Image (spheres, rainbow, N blue to C red):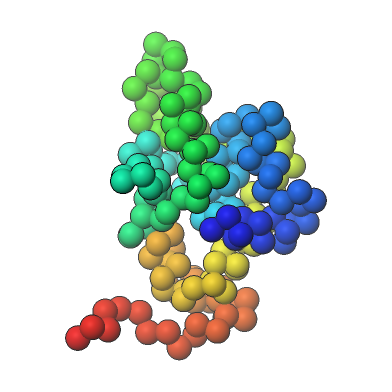
Length: 181
């Protein structure tokens, strides 16, 4: 999974792939967590902004993110960062937002951070969210069958199939479903 982040960063021509996102002193935690969600799981900022704390699962020593079915595993370097972030989310120490359920709580009570605000924070890192997401999804559909990627990340089967064809994927004849019958 971390190699996917590395490949996505290389596609973006980032000189020190993904390590700039893991460096604690480089940027604010919000932007780093959002950028890694884009790079690892090819999620749009509109979806990332709507993630709740209950979408991050910590079971049996493994960290998972619920984006589709089944939840997606979180690789070791990012899992620790994500769990640390959960304990120190911004905008939760105010009288109006102490019990915010959003992964990225906004300044308004009960509301998540807007995708536009997340985008601004990512741009301060010199991270282009749309190009990062495009590079990530193209890389994912080359590594696994499009229907599998679609289910795990909450994409439509047709979308991932089209992206796989455009990227030159070799999984075109994969038949999804239960083959144990």
